[in-house]
Image 1 (cartoon, rainbow, N blue to C red):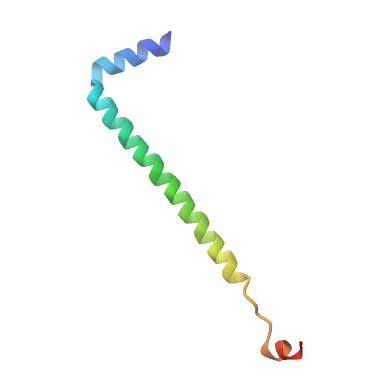
Image 2 (cartoon, rainbow, N blue to C red):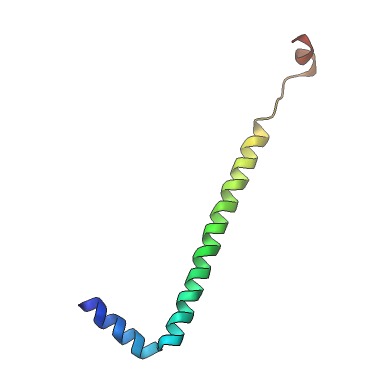
Length: 64
């Protein structure tokens, strides 16, 4: 019941248009945050794959 009263007061103070604009901006922020997290994970995976390259000396490779 308390949440309903708070929601009604916020709606009266800001109006429907302002609230929808704020929710749209919040959605864009969440999307940008998720994109940043995914980009960071890709960078970590790329760095790990760089470290996993074959570093066997050429003289050892020829023996097999």
